[in-house]
Image 1 (cartoon, one colour):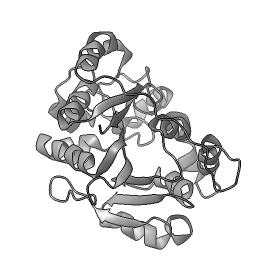
Image 2 (cartoon, helix red, strand yellow):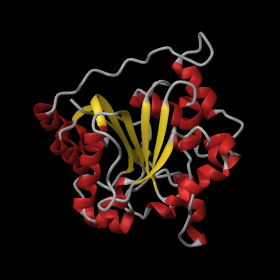
Image 3 (cartoon, one colour):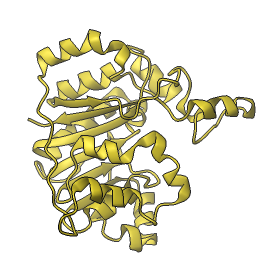
Length: 270
């Protein structure tokens, strides 16, 4: 949650949904003696990742983000709407030996998996996920972790019901104690969520927190790992790097800002 409103809002949230203890990081690895941070670092440093993708690490902090969510190499993990596979290129190798990675998204990503078996050949399966029409993520209580990176505004753009249905489907597929990890572009505190999602591709953090609690999740943690105080939060995120979709005259200024200010939220199914 933005530090600007945490002192105001967080006591109210804690009163209704106490923070859970942090998830312990076990030390299992493909190579004996390697810790989970070492395995994650290996995946982040992988030679299979392009220089363009690695250049985004300074803004997206994949190592710290996945550690915060509490990922382990023997988990069953579902990634929602993987897009171009930026995080999938890290998750797939990390989970290859002992875990299971399920990608839930568009047929285009299924084609990407087929086209690159050396990297994605051990993705267990790709399933359709297009809220509110296709929501089945698998058997109830079957996943240890569900992750979504910068997608929740797209579901809200379809409708508030679509976003709520997506959260409910995540809740249903998670095992008790399972984690829902969310990274999203942050709007100004208490901004109109529908308008922010439509015009700026952002959601106010208080809106997602309230929706998660209403769905039945407990708040497992909030991190500022992906915060960017330089971001004014009042412009469309695609005008910022890496897209720089606005006029060329603003590119230099917005490159200095960097990528968008992002909330990083960990929710836990009781």
